[in-house]
Image (cartoon, rainbow, N blue to C red; front, side, top):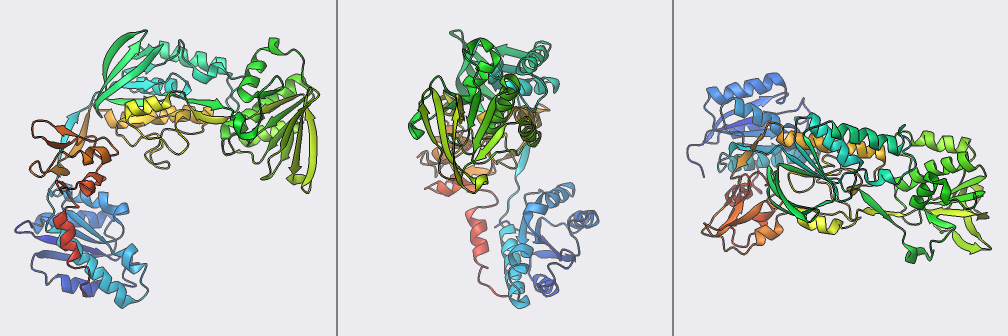
Length: 555
C-alpha cells in the first residue's frame, strides 16, 4: 500500500439516471468518514466541460494524489478523466473507476440493493486506489520508412498515399510487374476505369514519386525487431537485401480455387471458372464457337463471396452485350451490399439476363451431348423443378489467400482467421490492423473485397501507418508490465502466450523482458506466468486482493 494517500472521490448522477435507483447522498456521507478520503463531491454531469475543469482545480487545490470516479462506464469517460488529471499535474494512471450506472443502477430495480452494491463497488475502487502506482510515459524514435508486401491494387494505393504523406516506401512484388489480378480481369464495375487504364494510372503515379522504391521479383525472407524498427531481410534475383522499416503493410491479395472433389464437377471445355471466362472475354481469339446459352453458377464453391457475385454480374452483362443469346445466373443469394451493385443487378436484368434462385438443395449439373444440363428447384416458380441446357457453364471459385500465405504468416508472426485470411485486430474498429503492432493488412488478403473496397483499404492502411509514425516518435507507457527477474525462471511461458510478440529474453538479467512499444497491455503474460513474476500495473495482485476484501461488505 502507498503511504500518505489522499483520495478524491467524484460521484456522478449522470443527469439523475444513476440517482433514480442509487442513494448517492447516503453513499457520500459514508465515504466522508473514511480516513484517507480527502474529498468527496457529487456532480450532475461529471463528464461536462465545466465539471471536468472543476475536478482538475479541486485535485490541485486539495492536494489529492489518487482519484476515484463513481459513475458510468470507463469505456466512455476514462480518457476524459485521465486528461483532466494530467492537466492538474497528477499522473493519469492513479485513477480508479466504479461503473455504478451499468453494473448497479441499471441491473437492480430495488433502490436498497442497487445502493448497497454501488457502495461496495466504490469502496473497492478506493481500496484499489491505495495501491496504484504511477506509470511513466516516454518518447521513442520510430523509423518512418514503410515496407509494403504485394504490388496489387491495394499495395499500390497504400504506397501512393504514404508517399503523399512524406513516408519513404519500399514496394515488394514477387512477380516481374506490378498489378496483381488487374492483369487477369476484363472489367472493374462499378469502377469506371478498365483494369488496364487503372493499372497504367497507378504505375504512372508510382513512377513520379522519388520516395517509392519498387522491388519486383523479390520476396521477404525474414523479419526481426519490433514496431518502429523492423529489420527486413529481402531476396531479389537471388541477392539478399537488408532494410529497416518502422511499419509493414501486407497486401498480397487473394487467389481462387475450384474444389472439384466437393461437388464432383470437373472443369472442361464447356465448364470453366470465372477467371477463365475473364481471360476469354479479353481475347476473342480463344472463342472457337460463340456460345448461345451461357450459365453462371454461384454459391457452390463459396456461398458467402461477394467477389463471385460481382464477377457473375459484370461478366454476365458483358456476355449479353457482346454475344447476345441467353444468359442465366443461378444462385442462392446475390450479395449486393456495396456501392453500385444494386444498379449493376438492375442493369443486367434490364439487358435480359435471367436469374434463377435455388434453395438448400444444390442444382444437378450433368454434361450431355456437348451441352451442360442444369436441373434445380426454383424458389420463384412455386418450387417447380426447372431444367435448362447451356453451351457454356461458368462456375464460381472459392476465394482463398494468395499462395504461400502460411510462409508469410510465420515470417511476420501474425494470425489467420477461420477462412485463412490475415486476421484483423478488430473487424469493426481496427480492420486493417493485425494483432501485432506495426503490421497492417490491406485488400483481399484480409477479406473478400471488391476493387473499390480494396482501393479504400489501401488508403486506410496508409493512414493507420501514418498515425503510428507520422512524427518519427511515439509515446509509450514504460513498465506497465513489470518482470521480477528474481522470480523469473525463464520457462518462456510468457513468450509463447503473448499474442503480440512483445516479450523477449533479457540475456543480461536472465529473465523475460517486455517490449513497451509492442505491448498492448492485455495482461495474458501476467495471468499465465506460473512463478507470478509479472505484474500488470492497474491489475496487480495487491490491487485485486484489496478489492476482494470489500466484495461482501454492506453499506
